[in-house]
Length: 106
Image 1 (cartoon, one colour):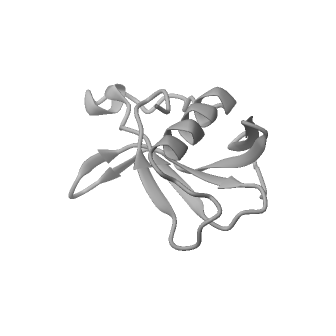
Image 2 (image 1 turned 60 degrees about the vertical axis):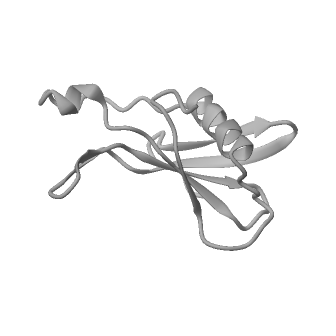
Image 3 (image 1 turned 60 degrees about the horizontal axis):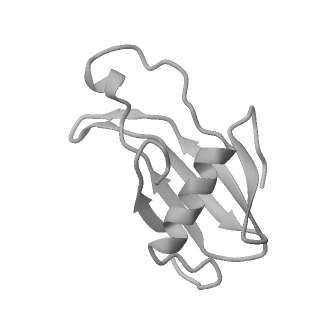
């Protein structure tokens, strides 16, 4: 997986390696208002992807500038654990599974 400009990385959870990559920054939708960033997760050598959807930052909801995004290996690790505990099976086949997480990845 190609990681550009610090927008991705690899974390190790329980002896397995997972790649994460920032897919989209927070965006303003004409129908839904602000949508948070999305992060893709994939276990090394496995087919099924998980997508984490974060809430829109409060500053955007208040009309303030976007500012810097804060996603790192720690938040990605929490997201992997949250997806696994919610039933994500990286070894299964099928469409990516989408999980809503909080700002900390839980």
